[in-house]
Length: 317
Image (cartoon, rainbow, N blue to C red; front, side):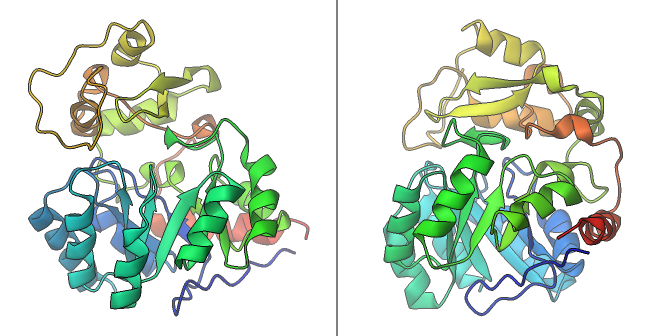
């Protein structure tokens, strides 16, 4: 019978060492983060693509509905990075997870406000730098993850390397959708896991029904790698829009509000993600992890946690 390890990030110790991944644009919002925090995990609001007022509102909503741990996830690549981080800190967010580029300043802001900073990395080099700068924990993300990817190497390959290179807790991410995936990460030495794809198929996730149906119908052949204007590869589900991206034929942005520090303008990633969330999936990008085909049902977040706990317990140590 396997037991969950205890995950400690700064002073924070969730009941389960499970972090719900931060999925932009507006996939991970207050209802999902609240439900995860209430179930004993760490609930995450994706701040990327939100206005400062919207983020403030999301944090306050989550706070008023939960006594659990609530954090934000923010991409370094967004132009409003600093302002969003400061807004979350002002709202006394429990922790900040950051990826898609590397900020040194955030560690200083975290230290000043006593807010744990967790860096998403895919190499030992960045893990060591993050630890030296003052990160409270590391999310080691393999190529199996959904959304923007920082590596072409598998989680199984990078996780032991990163764990042996730092002393702070290392959280495994990328392709983990069930108890056996969690158990595998624990056996490799992870202090916890980050799961995003599994929580899209929850009742509390705010995406459209069409988005969830794409997940439910997905086969392993539907999951493809695409280029993103952010300058990194992304993992998404095959649909008419994604086919255009693969054929270098995606529509260029009609208008641009300069949301990213650097953008190739190949197509508008924010618009593409927002379209999918709203249900216009044929005109958008639906990001997903590699193992989405293993998921066959929409459950409440509480039931997802119950199921994961049961599956982990049934695993041999």
